[in-house]
Length: 148
Picture 1 (tube, rainbow, N blue to C red):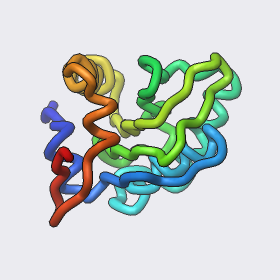
Picture 2 (cartoon, rainbow, N blue to C red):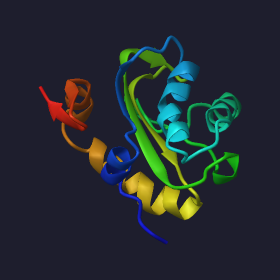
Picture 3 (spheres, helix red, strand yellow):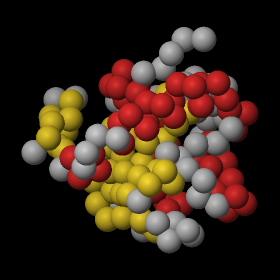
Picture 4 (tube, helix red, strand yellow):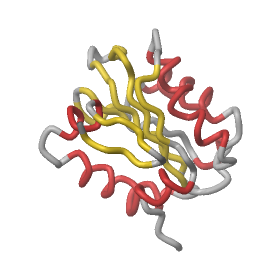
């Protein structure tokens, strides 16, 4: 099993979008998944699968106030392991009352990738002090994010 790197995936797939507009959590999920669809990592139905799963089970992927990792099952249209990262101009609220403004969408081809590789990288990223504030304050310059 080859390890998927969060940073390498974001850069290789050009899957970072900053200051997106979304009126609802559903729209935010679709925006987060769009770079994965564009790069060919997932089928176009993957975003809808996440929305249906959220409506059935609740927002299981809201990891903390401000941040979510939307994902669905591998059989919901995942072709290869990948990540995307978007920030929202204004936070959206989920049914559990949490507001989210940074979404890191995950496409995982297996549960092993999801639990053993993807989750630890996301957790490590969000253990960085004030990371949401730093990501929200970033600007994209020639393919890289730079902090203000």
